[in-house]
Image 1: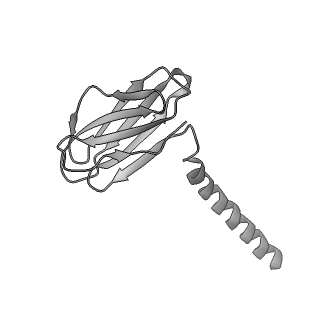
Image 2: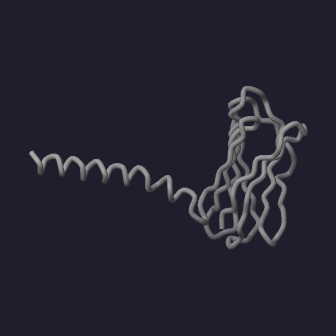
Image 3: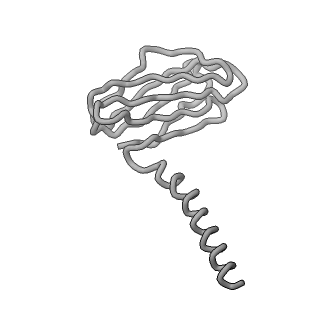
Length: 127
């Protein structure tokens, strides 16, 4: 009986480690970084390999349409716009690929509310 209980505990700990590990690595350098705001929704930025492209994503998790704009800040390089503001309906999704040609850049994504009502949402840097 003791061996069976020990085996069950080991299985439980192994399962917990497998579930916790991916959440920890999701914020490692060079990976997807995300941020959320109750007023605007959720944004993420993901490096797209060695070509210097960065995928920006926005989910409008609010109950109203939002008029917003992406900007990508590359530390020590500059800020890049997405070509203007856009409207996303409630529950909607929008993405944009920034092609800055610098795969070694440390970047973070900004989502600005272009109506001026809400503060921007900003992701942590990904390098």
